[in-house]
Length: 269
Image 1 (cartoon, helix red, strand yellow):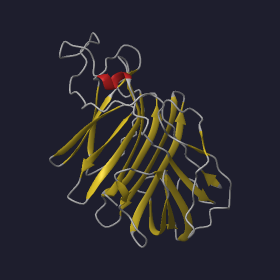
Image 2 (cartoon, one colour; image 1 turned 180 degrees about the vertical axis):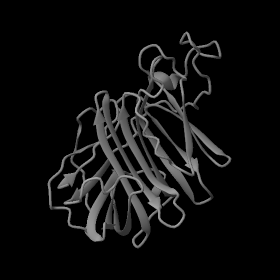
Image 3 (tube, rainbow, N blue to C red; image 1 turned 60 degrees about the vertical axis):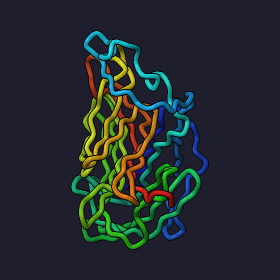
Image 4 (spheres, rainbow, N blue to C red; image 1 turned 90 degrees about the vertical axis):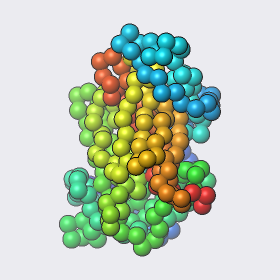
């Protein structure tokens, strides 16, 4: 596998060029050129609290009123770009359970965070770079020297394409980073433990409609509509910053389309 570059963009910015790709100075990122796509939304922002009403079989709100405003709005701050760069890796090296890696360095800029890794791939030491959209809540919770597990999937079928990327803590197997972009009701829910999530048809099912994702961790919970973002508390110092670039549902396919980026961050840093 010469080079794998995974790009994801949210509704409102199809094909938008991201000229701000960065690469950690601790890793050689010049082995192959790549083009990135920035994930932002161009629709207007709505800061009202998410509603828990769901859709009935006839597409109306279960509360009897209109659908939440978030169903037809989007937050321009949403950023769910993720990218993996690898050079001369063997095919299928990153399928579950993934490969053990060490963090060589983390480079943060205003809109992006790039993590340089050295990985043990079937007994061979190989570099990798993971680039993601930065989170306003704080810096990512992994640092130089951390032991992590990297997992990546990229496959297509007759009905659509699936991409997903995971970074897990090698010590306790908890999720540090989970990113997914899939179309046509594919299951990309390779687990995000300890986080769980469910999709709610809160905006109707007539055609392809925005969905609501409910994320939960222990006693904490957050609901985020398609095209919106939020955070899920972990403890007093850390949280999961979550951007839902797109989550669509329909009367035929509950999981019609999904694009999200979840990363563990240190709050306020």
